[in-house]
Length: 181
Length: 192
Image 1: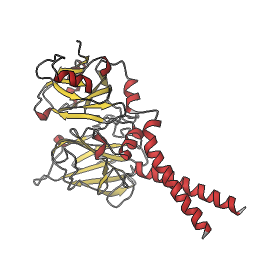
Image 2 (image 1 turned 120 degrees about the vertical axis):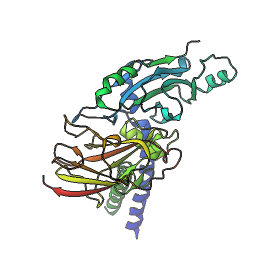
Image 3 (image 1 turned 60 degrees about the horizontal axis):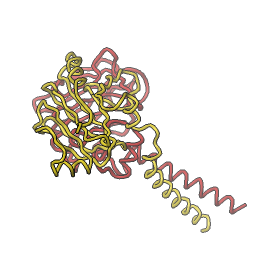
């Protein structure tokens, strides 16, 4: 009976360890999607992600059929803006925070068309925007983020791989940075 | 002496339960967070703005670029419909229908996510480029040896995974996942 109690205590302690691991892992992880994106290049610049080669590691788990551009923005320096003209093909975008969670995502099937014109505001900036103390261009898709450190991922699907260079060129022309006051 | 034995037993049980449960939860995901449809599994919460703690841990562990909920969802299979691990020495037939989506891709990877398709061949099967039956169903083959119809040629030896990504799936957007069916994975000849 006493042995059973000890074993039961072990199970309970194991559950505590399990809960601790699940809750602690996001804070303890050293190689995260944020660190991987940050290692690719400076902020405020659209960076093309290389197509994953067969047989090579693919830590970001990119789909080789698509082309990707990422851009890091610090909203502490002002509202973020990502803009550009993309080819007439399926594309989507997602805004990630530092923890790797998706703050917002959409596709060009949501009526955006070929024009990418996205503004990212933190809570204070959204407040200023509502009071019309920040001027933004017409047609800007406004997204609020609770975090200042964010990055945007644009995924573009070339209809054929032969067209990939043209689509990559279009992605590399995306402008990204802070709205200057 | 007896106390020491009990203490050691408790610690061993605690470590096995704690680490084992965590490994199982984050790899298999069957406990909380993931959904399973036949041999396929996905983490639908990984693309949400407020994932649950298990999904947050999964995101941290993988360090991958997840698809946002508005973009799509990725299903992964490590075994066939009978639960046997996928092996590159076997030929697999993937048959059935896929949920409505703008398009999907199917690729084969190793456990680290590296693509194992033939380097000078197509790296993924894409919905727009596959032949279908009149009723919309499809048959795909994944193997090292020559296969009919829609064939994804792979290389190497050992286990592998199949990754099915649905882009802009009309019935998956929003909070829930309502996948009625995904294609089944059948193992055919092995040893090729």
